[in-house]
Image (cartoon, rainbow, N blue to C red; front, side, top):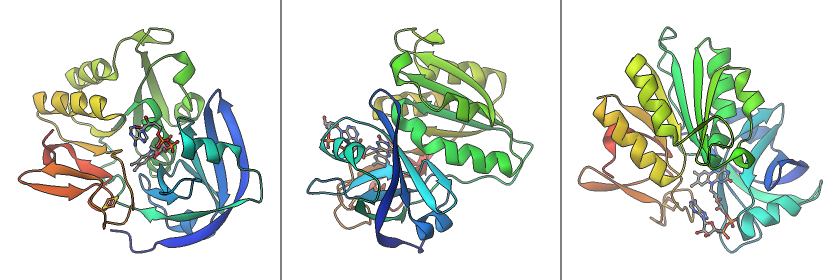
Length: 254
Ligand SMILES: Cc1cc2nc3c(=O)[nH]c(=O)nc-3n(C[C@H](O)[C@H](O)[C@H](O)COP(=O)(O)OP(=O)(O)OC[C@H]3O[C@@H](n4cnc5c(N)ncnc54)[C@H](O)[C@@H]3O)c2cc1C
Ligand code: FES
């Protein structure tokens, strides 16, 4: 666990609508920016009773950015914030992705939908450390693809959409299966909606490979006390906010 955590009232620097309904909110948060490890998240005040969890999408100097799709009260609230307004942020939280140290082993990123939000920081950090990276990215349609140019800076990217409006038509698991047929010796990093995670874990099990999977279960507290985020691992339940959000695929029974 990362014990450097901060509870701050962070000032919004800017809100960018990068695509219809998709925003990046940048907050001045020097401590969080300094101590964040790729794949970690924060809990953020979002105008609702409970704080909301968001992956740390990128760090720029003393600012942390959060990418989200507006789907409800919390994300709507964030998207309407104006510069200089402040919100409570608690983080960085949880366990992120582990880089193996073996730079000859490529990293294969598998992202579904808004699960892409966690990967620009992961990809940049891995790239700057000398890893080769490839991204497989699935989304519902062309309108739901974001950060492609950013991810291209760090390696190849293959796109697939449910409706075929961009890239191949189908699900990201198909790209993963093709990739594993070519080369199983890759470190696989995954984030996306639960049904996608289930099929990715199934594919990994079939190929006898283990992935690092970032779970996006509902979280009420983000620091281990409420048990709203548990998933089954072996014969016990684990808290994805503490033992995760990134966990090994072979430790989870879906
Ligand atoms: C560790 C973690 C990291 C996350 N990172 C991001 C991120 O970087 N960007 C991002 O856009 N979202 C992220 N999420 C999800 C994000 O927290 C939810 O999108 C957010 O809580 C929605 O809040 P809201 O108040 O706008 O929606 P609400 O008003 O709470 O809900 C609107 C609708 O969305 C559904 N919903 C809400 N949260 C989730 C969820 N977690 N999974 C599935 N359905 C949900 C609700 O059931 C409801 O139908 C993350 C979640 C976790 C646990
Ligand atoms: S969100 Fe409360 S224990 Fe994990």
